[in-house]
Image (cartoon, rainbow, N blue to C red; front, top):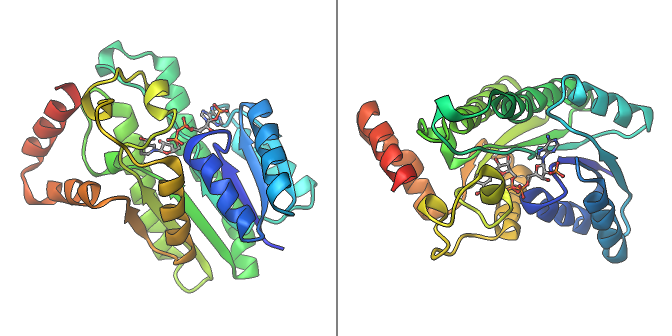
Length: 258
Ligand SMILES: NC(=O)c1ccc[n+]([C@@H]2O[C@H](COP(=O)([O-])OP(=O)(O)OC[C@H]3O[C@@H](n4cnc5c(N)ncnc54)[C@H](OP(=O)(O)O)[C@@H]3O)[C@@H](O)[C@H]2O)c1
């Protein structure tokens, strides 16, 4: 039986994705900080599907946490075939007014932990000539993001890093997919401090976590390199290439602050 490691499985896209693996008979290692939410998810999956679900609660923004998670999984004798680097968060505000501790945690989680987990698991996947990695980026990856400067930059990193290593891994049986969702109905906006306006305007209807998870799951299985969820997001993400960079950043600033 194959096994998937899903980070950020306690809510939103990661939680929704856990059910998709279980439905296809793939065992799970689910991780996030909120242990009770993970245990709840484990119980829910166990009532519907007969796959093993291992819960490992940890804070991936802590130094060394990704390597400790890898060791913990190895010590349990579990082999990871699917790595879903989904845990991440954002923060809104003018950069000079943001807190360093939050920016540091964001960089540690969105960039460092994701990179470390890829480096830990890829050699084993290469040896077995099978591995599928899904790194959750964002449409934020395609342009600079005034009022979310650090978050947008972390997601640019995720996109470029994923494309680069996917290219390096051609022919090895291991693939890396970057999933780029646009605004999605999860706890993300709340955690990032969005009010009910701007890009998360409550009057708009956003895709559900389930919809985005299904889209990402299919792209992972199809070994796609980069996928953007939704036609509007696809057009917006790619339109930046048609305009001078200073126009793109000015338009994004307007969209983020209107
Ligand atoms: N929703 C959107 O609009 C949107 C758009 C584009 C991209 N994304 C990306 O999608 C991914 C999933 O987010 P979501 O939308 O599903 O939001 P979410 O519901 O807030 O889920 C975030 C997940 O990350 C986990 N997490 C947060 N901090 C963590 C830490 N320090 N250590 C370990 N796990 C941590 C959370 O669990 P705990 O709190 O239990 O630790 C939770 O399971 C993120 O990478 C996000 O950047 C979201």
